[in-house]
Length: 344
Image (cartoon, rainbow, N blue to C red; front, side):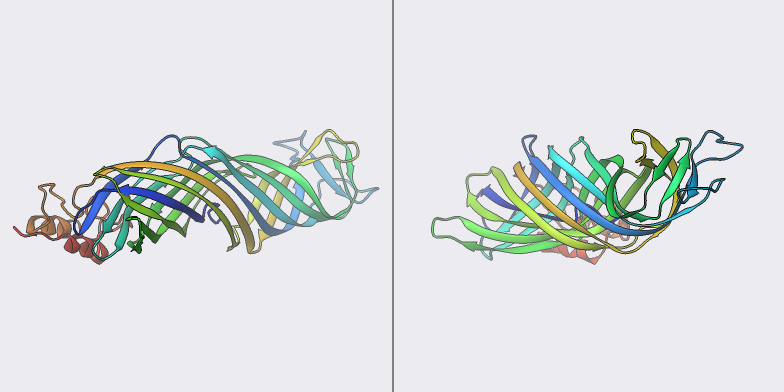
């Protein structure tokens, strides 16, 4: 399942201290930040379902019988459909941190170590329906008749979104331009890996996919304190690779004639590639303090040979030497360290 949070964008207002060369601040979201999102997914699915009856293990389970009359036993019923999960996050209070850098002399800005939890300890909902086409069939236990349908939408499942995080995957460098009033406009796009997890169609899921967070806004100088306020919206469409096939996946189909019961079925089917559409809005408030020098691994206030030795000792590994938090210590991290090199 492609991440339901694959495109985020929010403008920023920043109050920054004056100074020469690149300055860095450690920033964090405050609890008043809010985030809302809805993602609609459409995945074609073709296969069959059969009642969950088993003479030994589940003799009271549902049996499926094709047609209006006659027949017996428990028989597979062919269907075609579009599975339509809808994931919703409503006014959660996200948490997160990143380092923000700004060089007034060159207008260069950077974002490092961005890590966001968009749910902030809360949860989202996943409601799934199916746009169904199937021929007429009957069930026993419960006794019901299902008249053949063509592209009729039926609600089938309620699940939950329990995790939604974004972790920076590469260096993010942008540019700022000066305004007449002493402020700066800036823009930087942050590559991230977005990981989502939860339950849908009675099964747990977890997936990670690449995405990008676009930060745009205004920089202003105000002592040594940084404050960030952001508001923004997203309207994004993307393709989704086909998930793994369903094998005996539990599927509760509401009865039609008569209504009020549920047929307990098992689905077997194969997905095709699908699509997703995401709309989102955010109001983010952040505060920050001057950050330690990026690359100063021994925290002695300088970036020099001692820090380079620590960088090399962590080469190829995650950890505090992975300055851009892409999962491994490599040349990109060495470049960040050398950009802050000091004498001594």
